[in-house]
Image (cartoon, rainbow, N blue to C red; front, side):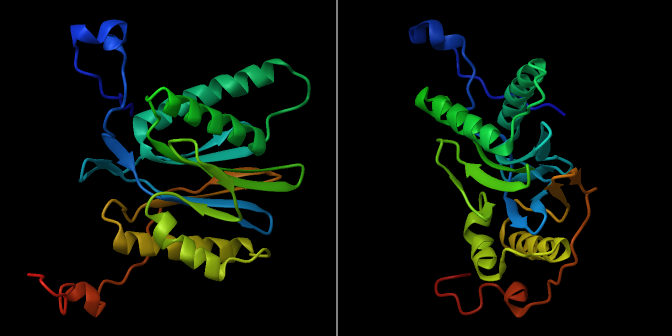
Length: 245
């Protein structure tokens, strides 16, 4: 599955830049990515929906990918731009491997590279329309960071993109702790994804959870969460709302 960025309309007055391609509007997009540190490494979750505008057109879009030996990347936003970023990273990892010096790029280096790429494209008024989450483990050190489409970046014990930044982060702030087991970390991520499923129209009930530790990384097969839709607020959402139909 390959998505192509939209083209600018041709205009002879634009000069030599007229044939360049830019994602002027995000066409096929993915929603939130949520990630956290746990006792042994990093856990990351994302659903597999790809929205064409407001239509959930694609149901099997993988938005988490391994990067080199030590890193895992998750992305929300424009899928074609995410594929472009993966091309950049493939070239970076290949170039690093060609040195054959026994060393390899860790998650901190990959995250720093992504912050420069996103900020550089923003300065060219040709941004990559994504919010990225980069996590990994190298030499026993856990790393988790995020970068936005304009290059804003930070590290934290838990991060989220899209609606997850508003709906999942409060849950994570309240329930996350440093010694989370793998099972408790998965339950916490599933709780966040369930809230997002209830509240985010672009989320679907088909998700993957990935983990990365010193031993390696694993991305789960897609699966569905158990949900409950009989809450009174779901049955009559406009009851008591002033001015509603």
